[in-house]
Image 1 (tube, rainbow, N blue to C red):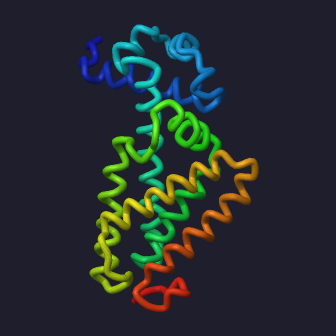
Image 2: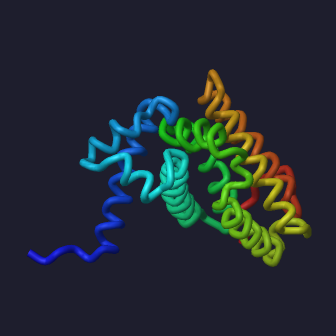
Length: 205
């Protein structure tokens, strides 16, 4: 039987380690997840982890990157189903906050991530988020839907508000109630950007 190409074997090993770590981090949290336990569960060694990710922290970064990519895909699906570009932007923002109620995202991305990797605002994926949100805001302004303004500055402010609100939800003693408050507040904030009729969530033509 032919051997698998080296690149394919490396990709499989990395995927196994990420899947095993993701399950462990989601179940017991980063601090209590045993590297020996989750590596042996998929027939690998701690040495394989060090070789591919450097250390446990590097593996957490890879797990968060995977979850973040899945979140992005879900958010694009949400906005793709919206009735207008504006409603799609609003729906993406509120859907992101609602994801903060999901146990895996709460524990790995919103609790363990910041405590181990530092401020989420400086994570590598945030540059992509800022560029995407800036482009959306530029498009909304070009269509006359929102007031004129600096798209990057506004994107950074909105992104910071969303990150902070998601953390608030994830760490709240009453996350469901906190989520409802955060969603209503972000809708009010976004309404204030509309070029006219700021008190209503209008549906642009």
